[in-house]
Length: 244
Length: 336
Image (tube, rainbow over all chains, first blue to last red; front, side, top):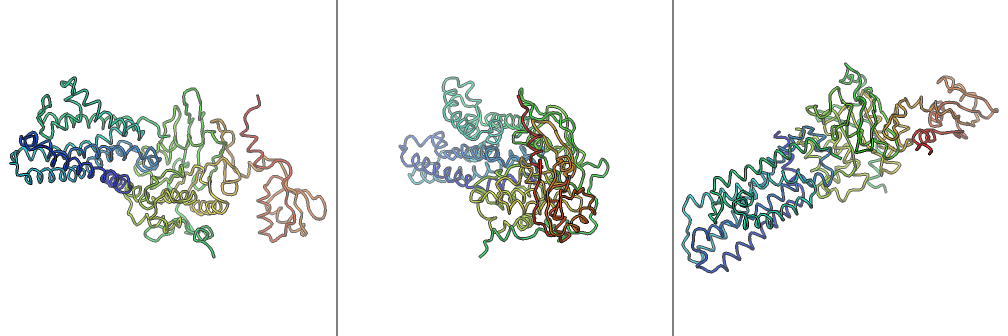
């Protein structure tokens, strides 16, 4: 199993796609952190929740972490490397488990880099503008670990999504359409259901306290449940479907 | 000046497999017998059937491959060869029937890459990944050391290009990279799907020499092709399928005999040729003092025999139907 995880990590590292995803992630977080850190008017940057929003901009890395997870599966189907992969490891559940683990590990790295960057810039903006830092130690820890943990889970979730959908373009469009449009609509119109959706569960896990969001622990549990559900679907489908 | 590429193909393939301990596996005088002793067969298909909707792609296919043989798996495009191979390899599940490799279904083998090397398609690479990284990710998943990657790269003479991304590889290079991946685990059985596709004549010859060398010492090869001529000089036996059904399972010799055609031969040293043919128990009819008709063997075989006997040949013409004709006849669509 460790052998398979090492192989999967090498797959992530050995294409330029990953570099592109990381560069895109850093660029987007830089842009959003700097814009909101510098342009937001001071009164809108004093409350705990306001500062959480700024310091947690790094959670955008979750999108990229999920993309990396999706690519780890769908590019194998797209380019046919899934065949040698399964020929070398015919126990498909083992391949899927290794991919989930690799997605999670890569996600931790995305999280540390992304949220590290977002938090550093946000903190510098708050301090540089002479505003008092509003989060206590516990809140700061929850923000950092919750955000990074959420980003990591999205890496594994991406693997699950990729394995269920298999088609690269379909999986990516599905992720973006769900995360940026469908889920926001759902949360806006039916918050009692929308708060259980994965992106809002990750918001909760960061410690955000927007109306209707779940408590942090419940948010974390919900995101874990989503990840497990997709992981199980991925294992089941991988075992049943023929590789053409 | 010779190009690097050329050098690769001209190099004879004496010991295709070398382990990290320096042991060349194909050059020993008395090779170890191949592992599957009990049942004998390395690959067994038993009533293998695959149905896609209303289409019967593979129809109760049964065969067994003995160790140490090179088997040509032949049939026109769409005959069901690739589907059969996928079922053998656990990539597709049969609608009915079963397949086993070394006595078990492929998917139940613990470390299949250490016993079976496979090349399915020459396009199964991520174009943005280097050849070396492609091999590394596979060797890691099998728990093999990275040093083995460099060994197989040397073997297929791709070391110089291993650091380049696969998108810059020619089709021949991709075929060799695929072969390198198949050889990572130093397997006893090679399964190749249309490996000669896209190779130029010299590449085909390299492959042929390679497979011959591989099969010495009890190792087994199953190689599919839609062109009989591609494999006729390599294989010991043929499985011919058409529309999912096995139509012929025989040795190449038997198939050639079945052709029934004869080969007209002309030589200034007829007596010596007759002697050589007699030694190999091949029928010969004298037409005149310069030649005659050889029955039941291919012109390749006669040419080889004459060459071995040092008999000059001035003419060698297949008369009547050739192997290729028989192949086409066997695999033809039924007349409406």
